[in-house]
Amino acid sequence: MDNFPKASMESMRRVNEITGKQVTTFSMDMLDKDALRDLFKKHKILCVMHFACLKTVEESCYKPLLYYKTNIGGTISLLEVMKEFSVYNMIFSSSAAVYGSPSYLPIDEKHPVGGCINPYGKTKYFIEEILKDNCTAEKQWNVVLLRYFNPVGAHVTGKLGEDPQGIPNNLMPYVSQVAVGRLKELTVYGDNYDTPDETEVRDYIHVVDLAQGHVAALKYLKKDCGCKVFNLGTGKGFSVIDMAKAYESASGKRVPYQIAGRREGDIASCYADASLAEKELGWAVKLDLAKMCEDLWRWQSNNPTGFRPDS
Amino acid sequence: MDNFPKASMESMRRVNEITGKQVTTFSMDMLDKDALRDLFKKHKILCVMHFACLKTVEESCYKPLLYYKTNIGGTISLLEVMKEFSVYNMIFSSSAAVYGSPSYLPIDEKHPVGGCINPYGKTKYFIEEILKDNCTAEKQWNVVLLRYFNPVGAHVTGKLGEDPQGIPNNLMPYVSQVAVGRLKELTVYGDNYDTPDETEVRDYIHVVDLAQGHVAALKYLKKDCGCKVFNLGTGKGFSVIDMAKAYESASGKRVPYQIAGRREGDIASCYADASLAEKELGWAVKLDLAKMCEDLWRWQSNNPTGFRPDS
Image (cartoon, rainbow over all chains, first blue to last red; front, side, top):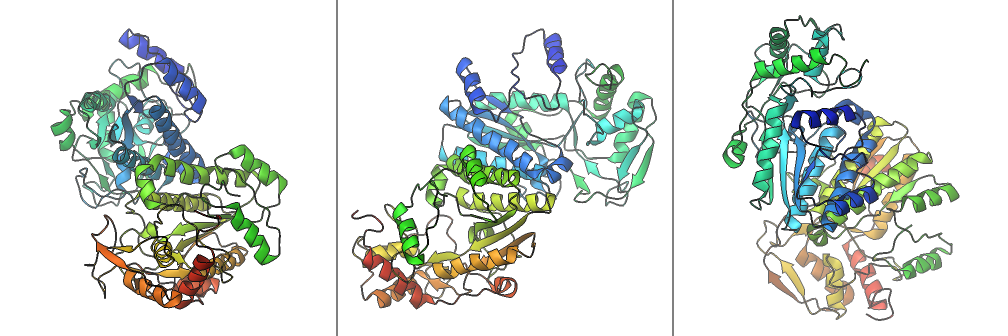
């Protein structure tokens, strides 16, 4: 289910095409509790994978109420309905944003949480706390919190990928649109960070590896795991310039960039210690940076205007 | 407006009696957005004093969803309706609980927040963050967050006081019910804390001083203050034994007690630096510990079964 505020039904059509299965899809709003109830009434649900959140950092700063209402209010409604229908398994799409500014690297799951600097990050943190408290109070719940680092790439077929509307907020979709000629040049925010090439370092993870992490979590839930938290990252940090260069190699296109000032609240480096997920979930990344860029370029060049015929 | 889950309409009748005014009262639920809208439609509202939260620490631990939904969901609904009707002034009833375990004493407003150990405290902390982010995004808002320490006492007439249902969760109502004979003895949780008499130390504030703090905050809002935070406390710490002894003096009754183990999550000492409220709001406490006990005893002895004819 999705209310499709930014996604396209065309993406679901392609999922069906790739998988050869009909994935039942519901166009509805999580805040509509009656619609949620109706969905739970009509289907036998074993586990909810909860990705339903607004996720644009900048927008969250000027529309905080909308973010708190949608992300937190929506999650509370969802939990209430799950409880009504005795569905007690959830995988929640959390974020490395819950760690705030890292106090050490790589970040493991014992790193302190909170201290988030924008409403988006706070909603992820608050939801984690709500889910943990709910598991503590009611032992029948099993919840896996997956803290994503920086998902990039696309499906290997080049048929499924990220399709941001307007100017992309994340680095790789931006880089990709520069390479394909939709945008003129990349803006690099800050070249005076304490990193090898002085641009920001992040832990980029291939979306297919990320998806596999969810399959592993789904199996793990069967062990009646209670509430567990895992980082989903590669453990490797790459800089903005690293990413632009890797994308140039994969695409054979130039990615010109200009340097601008730092953005408020940005941190120098962030990358995961992902060993817990390997140990407990039996999951590890398989796809490297070159593959992330290669798959993203296939998607971008086959679909220069995303899922829509033209932009 | 109140949905009166624990309060009595009799208390409102007595407010009218004491003040000689008819205070318009609405029995409705903050989560009922249509009812909220109706209220805002029918009345010209200059400022909302927002006290509408579930507040029992222990209950919040076994009903976390109810607490998150009521306190956070209710606040978000209220803010949305306020915005619809261009009401941008709020005084929010926050709590010293947002400080978590103190890292220094006395606690001033610059003390770190978060690290709350129970869902009740987290709801207050989360609401503070939501209100702050909302003020940052929309400059027309003025919000004063009042962080209460430990309110006790009663109105001087002995007609208005706290009337907890069942076994009281807070110290002074408990002490008071022991003194009046409704409960047998006080249980002191922990006598091995690092405090002068080894029992827990808190900052008890007379409810009338606390109420005056709200009047001061209401005047302060007229200055277009944006989002401001103030501690409402006395700056003095008293131990559990101090409080029991003071109440014995005020009531002339014995308050027998037994020592039990510490409660999980309890902290040794907590008291305010209340100098910011004095400087900015021009507010300071006027009523001392003897007066808190005297007024509480007058309420308790005149109303041994609270607002109800018998218990």
